[in-house]
Image (cartoon, rainbow, N blue to C red; front, side):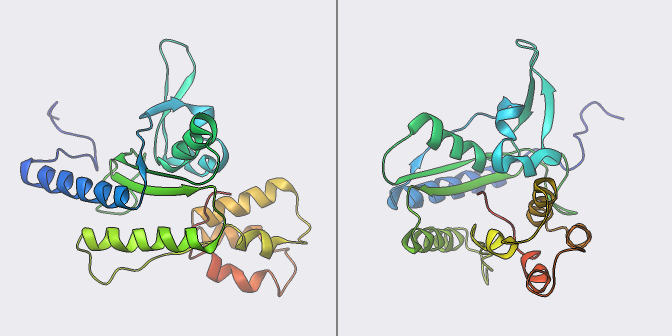
Length: 222
């Protein structure tokens, strides 16, 4: 095999496509700036316990891992920038009131999301912190729709989730913390078979009636 052959689902980006990606990246960041979002650039690598803490636990199987030759500690290559931006807001900026942050950069996945997907996608995101009202939800939704327009995507489908739904459905269910964590993990990965096995002993009909619907949506960080 030639030494120049790249790994599966990894590819060079040639001039015309690179120009298109960069123009789109600039358009999306300019659009977010007009909404008042500030750009942050989280690092490509972090200590593994930081990268996979909280909501980042769902990214464990998608995260490349390596040993830091300076410290000997395990490090991970980011598979999603969203938990990193939450860390920046909570532990570095720590602002009072509303904070709006955006980001756009490559992430790396151990496996492609689909048959023709790349393992090094470009991720754009915008997060609003410090506001729990519907106004923040509507703002982010409008920003997402404007982003899809900027990308010239037609007939787009927006997938919505709410951090309050799953705890409300699970309220009163007698299950230990480990099982509930596995349920959250199955919802995050949209694994219907795993979810069905985990909830087989849950009381009907209040809980089970919601699983087919919940398993179609990604669980957000909470």
